[in-house]
Image 1 (tube, rainbow, N blue to C red):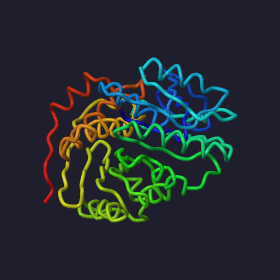
Image 2: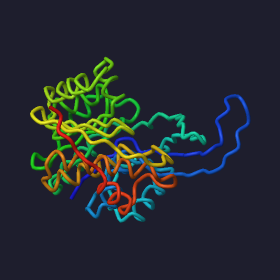
Image 3: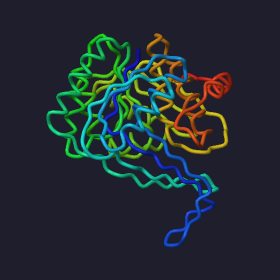
Length: 308
């Protein structure tokens, strides 16, 4: 089983427009509501790949039932730590040029005792899980050190994956993780420098390895991804597809990587699967995840090369 821990669920409101005109009236062509959160998207991706996922994390009373229904439709079981208030809403505007403009809400607050309650649930659920994925931001007011506490709580027999950035990533790495998946922008912002070439990128990945990661999977967006364990490094170029939405692409990559890691796959296969799932996700507009058919189609067309 793959356990996913959602720290900050959100309602993604994706709006398609001919163009986004600031300060003027805009007419909506299409609107989709997704009941998501990075780790919940990962759980759905795992399920679509035929794996067994279990979702936990924080949830909010006023509109949390919609998330339960969304996970039920995907066949993903769940158990949440419930809090007062509403789940935050993120607005994503996509124009006809596939340009994405995002307006993200801040997460709600959780009571102090709820933090301990989630740790207790993670301890129990991870003891029955082959892989534990923890991703996303934190509720308002929660210290970044909570990420370190969470990973120290995960059962030692469960492989650990983190997808976050900045101080939260560093806190997780202090506890040790099996795989970390930043994208290029996140890695640059986390390390405080710009990468000019592939050697710079690999140097940044090696810094995460030195800080406590066993494997780094670096997403390069439409250019594919790089994976390294410090000894071997590989690159997989994506294929050209029609981009309908980038929402959930990184989560699709994590879902496939977690699935392959659980199976004991080697680095090239983890990388190829991750790029296939991330690419398949961007071809969909009305869903936060990919279809298995599209994933299989793209996976068959990808090639992995070793970086020397």
